[in-house]
Image (tube, rainbow over the protein chains, first blue to last red):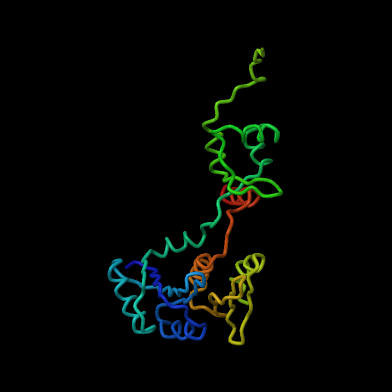
Length: 159
Length: 83
């Protein structure tokens, strides 16, 4: 028997009282109702112990149809371990400022601004008045791939 | 407020959310536009599971959660290295 987490999405923007009533009716499934206002949707999350994913999904679909009187527009069934992973996962990437990048690359901040002009350097995620910010993963990749050329650039003859 | 939800509630408030306890002991979460999102009971049957479900629901509704800072990552590594 596996503990499954089934999230059903309803295409209705339910009121708090309606959501509370749904939770009460689905108390045996430890249900949680939550709104997604920007989409005009409501999700109901249920917990079902079942031998397989299909059985768990079927039980949850029947229970939601009975309790909410509506057919979901989407449904997702995952293990409880996956739900825990998603809860702990950040929504934002690790960010780096120019100073952080200088530390990562072992160069001065001025050099970071020179590197920004090169084609291989990652584009910032945002360029704010206080300075730009980058995805740390993109900077680390640049650091791995970057061929350093120590010393001053070769002197160019001018006409 | 249930102590299990305090850290999440404090973070949500720091991001412009409103978190309040109602007369029935539920902690209710509202996004920065004042939209009701979900609630956490005073005595959930499974606090750990409910905490995870509420966290996922708040993120779906737009609450941003950054990765741990370098300081927090170092502290976590130290914790994991301890026998």
